[in-house]
Length: 311
Image (cartoon, rainbow, N blue to C red; front, side, top):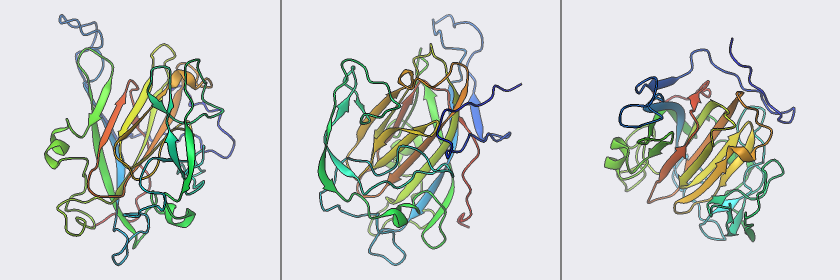
């Protein structure tokens, strides 16, 4: 019998709905005890393939373009926080909160890694350092425009499934997807999953710079596993665990990193399954950087609806 999925989320948040036919591929490593070479994690799969949805947009200024793509905020490009609510909506999508506030100085954990601003559901530790937000706002336009980022909207975006392959690092339980190491994306010069596809490349370029990407995954929490999730890249990225915002990297900017240690989420219970929801947007030329590093063994759950698949 499967372990039930638990949650202490507010009532309005959706419980995890697991697809019996999860779109998960595990490329198994050697099972059993550590290999003669001493890899104590040799029983773990060598690769994990996660399937999400990429949605392509046209940039502002062209017919049918979306106003947030190639938009320059009045306060300038940079890292903005507060664009989305702290909790996912009932449809497991981010909820618009504000046009965002530009980060003046970063919040950092005891290991000097950048982290999200203080939240009531994330345990603070001695040695954590608080950052600050400036008065500059306007990283995006409004709720109406934002609502189309991660929802299929005829005439505004087109979508298709997309696989990401996370590779277990040698002699460790760390899984990484890095556009600079992945054979496909290294040859493309960055995370460009829809070059020449869907709406096609951006005007005057041989790359497609205007798209979003959504992953819906699950994991089993191990209180002794030292579980963590780090994202490094650009542009906007939001990560939710059990419906709670734990990584907040909004805005158009160069590569920014944030980390969440799951031991800080004190409502998680050992051996129980929870959902990790991931939302990414690439909105501006000329780079697209994308790196996930995690000790979580993630599994794809039900794919988001795709009513506007390109054909």
